[in-house]
Length: 124
Image (cartoon, rainbow, N blue to C red):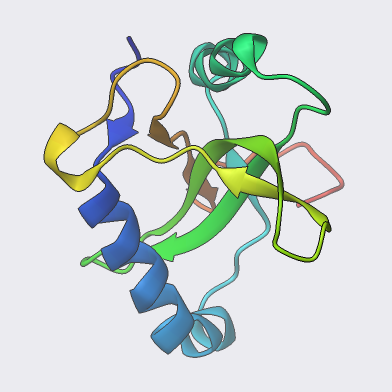
């Protein structure tokens, strides 16, 4: 199990803060990219092996209490709404499950760049 799973409550706090303060954060800070541990990315992809149809992950922007930019990454499953339209539903743990059981985790896989940048990259 990944050491970087977070609770649904934490993800909700981060994404809510981003929606409220994200524009100001971007205006004040240089944010070029996120460094993502391969081990954790493999964990979220492993959860999708049991899903049918197209396999996608969704990344939500978040902002921690100490104003560190984060991505909260979740697996998705194909679903159909009442009108017959296909969409991809987030695989989320129940709040009472803490970090979730296998197949429904939220991963805090990231550290922002800067400071975790490649100083030799032309992309920074």
